[in-house]
Image (cartoon, rainbow, N blue to C red; front, top):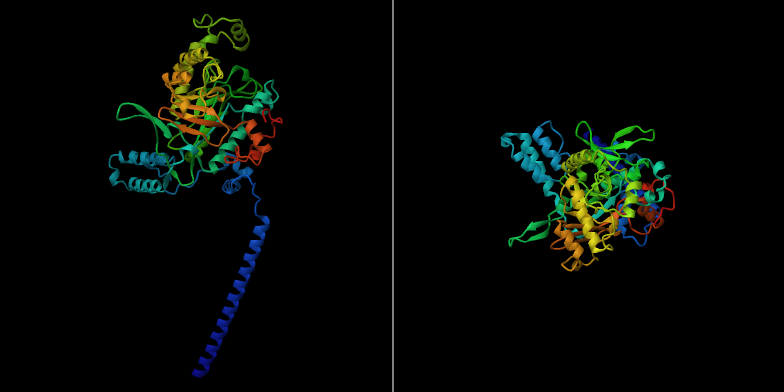
Length: 500
């Protein structure tokens, strides 16, 4: 009986092995067929690349496409910070805010300065997490590959803007709120991170007492890319009233910076209607879109006032001692400026308070000249007058700045670094009054030049003209590194867009 049972058991085991072998063979065969089908489908369905665009850029573009559901910021969530979750511990949670913006040293310093942190497990665990995240960062070395994008005041009511008498101007150089939202969302998903010009390079005193523009170390997680953002003409000019734009920046009852917007029925709303306020909302959800608290740059002219307040004595104060009475000026004063502004001193005071609140948020201020002329082609005498006027009427309100964003994009020198020297009187005048950062307009993906005494950078206009130009020329790379032009472009824009 025992032998018979052993024989039967062996036979069953052999049959079981045979079944396993057969099953394994069938599984391998099935997997091979699936793999073959996968290869065939991949060959048939793989995307077609544009010959003139590098493959890595095409791959980046294809991998970064978003759906409509992804576009609304309220529908997206901040990324998972497994080491940076809020704990209810006030010190740790405050430090986490810095760490989410890649300021790991600042986060560690905040905890380390807290009395008794050595005996606090939450504090010690947080420091360990920050050290781990810091160790994963890589040093950015490509200073010549930092892009700079800029906008003008955003269009809130597209119908009003695109049916006004200035529709062509707005269509060409303005961006809509919806377009801006999509652009920021796309750039965030493509791992761009806001950075201040002063965190790229800054003037530092050398051992011999001289000053020199010095590159600053930039440490980011692998794959992240720094970029600069600026906004031109943050003045809310009088001619824009009633055309579907915000009318000013102000402080609400809680001291928060908000926009004023006048609705079609004349009622007034307060909220987020332009670049600064919308981006502040976005950064609340996505603090990792900012490098160590960096925000954007706001550029101001002076002839119509700043921040929506009519602060120019030249145009808005009768009997201004430095007003120049000419037929042209008298006509402009009478027809294009609501003059006099009897509340001008209060407006100046309010504008100063708003400007300081904006600085406190981390935004930087810049000159855009006083009268928005072409600084390159104008006479030196007129150039000096305009620069002095900016110092007289704008700087006392927004504060000192070392950044100039050239009006009309016109640089006072050619592209060579040698153009920024003693032989260039206009450059020397700008240096004399305190400017160290000089930004023109350049359609290139990148243009950065760092000299001993200056930082120069080209800016890319992300407006109707540029977006539509990309749509007309899909084989070119004007904005494809940032977003998909076709999905961003507003269907309410009249076409063709001027300038394309």
